[in-house]
Length: 140
Image (cartoon, rainbow, N blue to C red; front, top):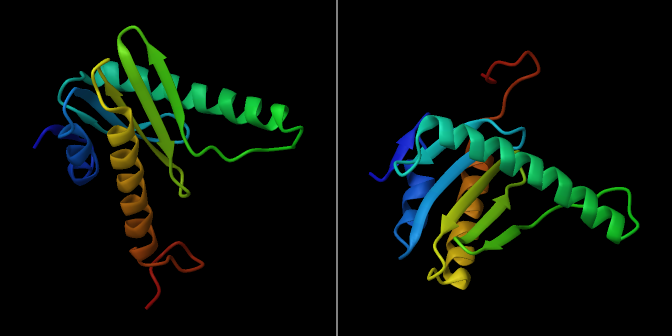
């Protein structure tokens, strides 16, 4: 296993980490809490990445809405290119987010495809989870 778990998250991150030149990945909540992260990161680094990614997503949602002259916008992905490589961030519909970092040599198309595939799998797993009852418990 290539990812450190704060829950059962290796199945999400490991396929992303198999891509050549991908150096790290983080699974986080929309509000910036780490759900899982790759072994290339320390807990402190993963926490810092999650907080920054959450902030960047918020800024990008606001910018997208402003450019569209709309009250809100749903993000599909955020891509950051730097001299150190690429960061690709893809939110899910259920409040989590996958962020991956690859070096300058990474194939961005492959990284994007794999991240979005894992986001779709996260959505399928969330939809397959048992619904909660009105009292917060599971229905009988």
